[in-house]
Image (tube, rainbow, N blue to C red):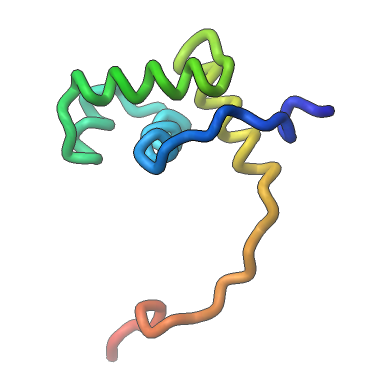
Length: 87
């Protein structure tokens, strides 16, 4: 089984959001501002992401999460009214 298809312990919705921001290289302070949560709460979520992904560092977690995302099947998205730019 490849490392990209390895099943991780499920992340919460918030942990997915934090992991996605980790892949962008954001600091805890910037993640907290983006998600409108405290830096303390951000550190808690980052720690959980690292543990659940079996990573050793936040950079390792970001890499593992990015690889996991790349391995996910793409869902065909249909256009919605929100996709239409008002004239």
